[in-house]
Image (spheres, helix red, strand yellow):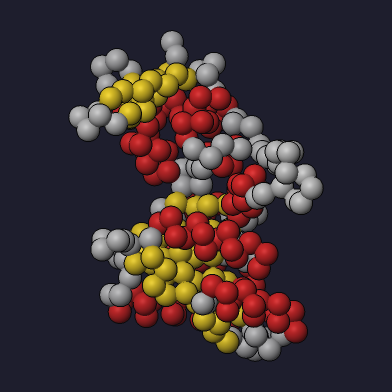
Length: 249
């Protein structure tokens, strides 16, 4: 698409699981076009060899950063310097920072200050400051769980549908977040447009994602919480169905 957001994908190899690279890159494609794809690490280390076929598969360029001092993460510095170079080049409109390291908190903040869209991807161990510094943060565990559900059954077990892995329940704080956001957007009848609701939830809590609770879409999460919310479908001007949500009284 002509107006597709051009993204720079920067991966911290020291703090990103190689086994989830396929899912990560598929998620990136949802947000825009990965114009720049780079990964940073000490590629002379024996444990980095298994990255090679994955990088070739996804056309990701490895950047060498030697670990000069034990205990110091040189990868962070290299990635931050490159991010600023890319920012000033003006070739991208957004960044995807793949890491579970809080050292990228200031980088995410600085990129957003410059008008960039910033997506974070990391594991659930990621410190909160980095999460809230991004426009949106996606947990790798949620990506893996969604992929496991979509994966075809093994040969000879075609008749058995794969059960989704257990997900954390929507806590009271999540319910309260949704309820308050509906109130913020509600029309005179108390209904909020589901698309606008999803955007507001992410603005309030960047790591909000229905997949964290075992649902592929916000509408399915809302429908599952039918003790506190209700859904309504309306025909729009283009005769397309549009979903709205309301708090139950």
